[in-house]
Length: 146
Length: 90
Image (cartoon, rainbow over all chains, first blue to last red; front, side, top):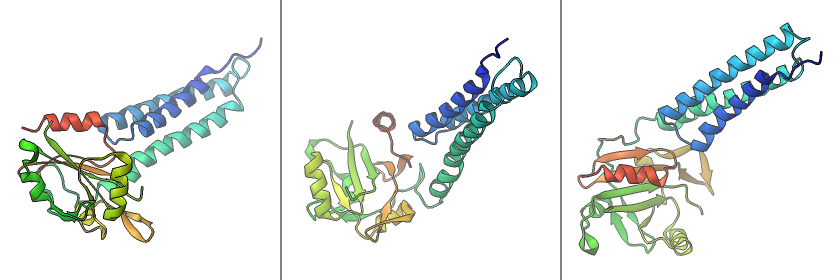
């Protein structure tokens, strides 16, 4: 009898790719996304283990003695990639304590605009130009050098 | 919506002006050439420089009229997220 396709190995690999892709494409560190990717990683590992057991334990019934280890290694790399991005990268940038948090007073500044005119935060917050009062300021820092 | 967007980077006023013209921006684009404000907001990217200058990582802060931070995002925010946060302001 021809050995069956070991779908668990391929499913585990696909789920590990999905776990990393969701995290990367959402490009966020919200708790929900992290938990979803972590849950998918666990599902991937369970599928891969089940697939490997069948490939080696029931090698007459299931294929996957070569594909199994290859897909498992690739999946572990993807899951490591997710773990790296979710734990190590934000910890370097997000955990620094001096970034203003919700509820903090925004640090004052006075900078030149694109015409060279000085602009201060307190001026922006009290500005009721154009005849209507602004509810606040959205301050957007970007990389620059465009 | 009543929110005043303001952009900040280490670009010079001339570079910011070119960006405004190219992108058709009508809100203030401020120049933090020495990265002092970027440091004050603790957004300087530790290991990266551009032409010898310190540069900022992404960060958006919604500041109400009392000067209090009401929302922040330290990755690039989607427009829908900003709108939701702005709607929660009184």
